[in-house]
Image (cartoon, rainbow, N blue to C red):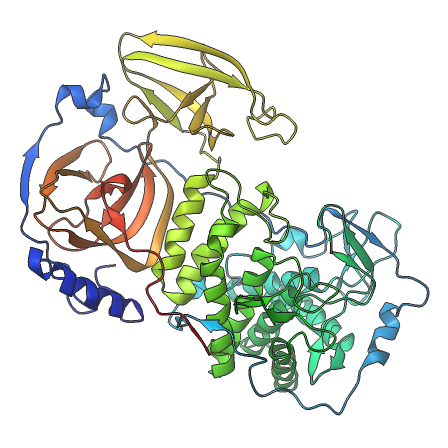
Length: 591
C-alpha cells in the first residue's frame, strides 16, 4: 500500500501532520505519500562489536521460507461441558416450534443507551477479508460422521455425545457449517460440488428457520439439550436456552445466502426476512425473556454468548461476542442499517475498553471476563479475531491489540526449513517439561529440567521445530536435530535468533510510526530482494517524526515494522525503537 486509507484514519493523520510540522514531516492523505523529515543519516557497516560474534551474512540476511501460520480449527462452543437430554417437562426439539408467540412488533430502536466511541464499518474490504471467508469447507468434510457430529436425513448437522447416541440441533455448529459451505461455494469451479455446498448451506438455514422461537418481535434459535460447563460457574442451562453468538452468526448466514447467485427469489426473500428477525433479537435488552444483549454497570454493551440466569449477568465471553459482531458487519454492509452500525460501534467500544482484561501478559489470553481462565486453545483465535476487527473498522486500536497478543504468546508453528543462528560465544540451553513435541502441557507447566552452557568458537546454525514462549520466561526455540536436539535456547538478537520473517501481520489500513526526537539514532534495515543482505542506515530527528507502516513481522528474532512511504520506503525498523499508533483516539460517549 502506497497511500493512506481515506476512511476514519484520516482524522488521526491530520493531527499527526500538525504535530510533525515542526520537524518538517508531512503525512498525506490518500493522494499524497509520506515525506521524510530532515534527518542525519549515514550508510554504514555494523561495527563488529554490535553483532556480538554473529557474522553479517547471518545477522542481515533473511531467508525466504514459507511461514504461514495455519488458522486454528473452530473450537466447540459446548466443549469442556456436559450435554444431557432435557428433563421430561422441557420442550423437545420437535415441540420447540409450539412456543412461538406472535403479535409483538419487531423493535425499531436501540434497546438502551450505551457507550460508543465512533468506530465505523469499513465497507470497502476486499472479498478475502470479509467475515468467514477464511473458513472454507473442505470437500472431504461435506458429510461429517464422527463421535460428535453427523448429518441427519435432511442434510443438517447434528451434535451427539457418542456413536449411537441421539442427535441434537446445535445452532452455532449448524451456522458455522453453513457459512463455511458458502465460502467454498463462492470459490468452487466444479458445478456439482458448487451445488452441493449451496444445498448444505441452505439446509442449515432452513433448520434454523423451522425450529425458531418467535418472541419479543424477534426470532431466537433454541438449543434443545441441557448443558453445564465443568469450570465456568453460571453456564448451567436447561433446554431451551439461547446464545448471542448464535443470534449474531445467524445474521451472517442469512445475509450471505441472499448474496449468492444460485439462490432463488423466494428463498432470497425468506433469508432476508430471517436476517431481519435475527437482528431484531439484538435490539431487545435483558428486561424480558429470552435475552442475549445487555449493558454492564459502566455502560458498555455486551452480546452474551452465555447469558446468565439473571438480567445483566453472563460469562462475558470475548470470542463469542466478536463472532456475533460479524453478523452486525454483514447486516450493515447489506442494508445500511444505522441501528446495526450503532450496535457494532458499541460492541467494538466494549472490546477496546476491556482488552486489558482479555490480555494475560506474556501468556495465553483469558477466555471470558467472569472467570478469567487462561485459554490456550482460544489465544490464536483472539489474535485472528482482533486482526479482523482491524480490517472491519480500519482502526489502529485493534491492530495494536493483535500485535500485543502475538507477542504475548505467538503461534509456535514453524516451517520445516526453520533455522536458528548462534553467534560465536557461550549460550545457555535448557530442557523443559513439555509435551512430546515441545508444546505446553497444563500439568507440567514448562518446569525446568536441566540447564547447560555451550560455547561455539564460530557462528553456527541448527534446525528448529518450534518457537514459543516458555511459561514465566521469554521466547525460546526448540532445536530439532544434531548434538543438542531436544534442547531449548532463548531468543536474543543478535546472539541467537530464528532466521527469516515470521508471523507477518499485513495492515489493511496503514498505521503511523513515531521516531523519537532528541537526535537519538535509530537503525533501519533494507533487505535485498533475495534476502541475502541488507543496507543499514542510522536516522535521527530533532523532534518526534512520523512514517507510515503497512506490516509488522518477526524478522531474525525481532519484532519489526516495514515503512511503506517516503524516503525510507521499504526499510524495516525494530519495534522497540519506535512507537506505533494505537489506543483510543476517538472520544467516548453514551448514545
